[in-house]
Length: 185
Image (cartoon, rainbow, N blue to C red; front, side, top):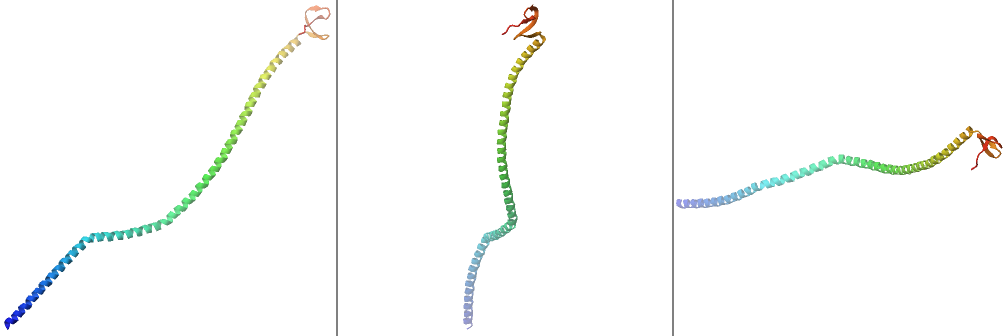
């Protein structure tokens, strides 16, 4: 019986060894599968970490951008208001300059007409003055001749002999005495 007990124990032991061997193979297969899974996880880890970092950094960047935009909106809106005010002032200045330019153009136009009128009057004065100068030069020349004639007449010894003019010359005329009648023209 002992042999039977030994056989039975050996069988049980063989079954157990076989079971352990199967379990070991199963565990070995699971271990290999876990190792492969772990290797895949380790290989995928940089990509997953990169993706997680991108998502996190993207969220941080979006939050930072949103925060910066929110923080800058107030100064930008102030700058926009000031720019609109400056634009309004510049437009008003431009409109005023256009009005002044139109007034100045009207003034220049009037000034041109005034200068043309003054030049026309001056030209007329010069022409009339030139004509009058020439005319009175002729009159003065004639008057000078007449003045010379009167001076000569005043210096000469002349008188009226009836209706004729007589002058005293070196000889005598019995009708008029020392005076001789002058020949008429």
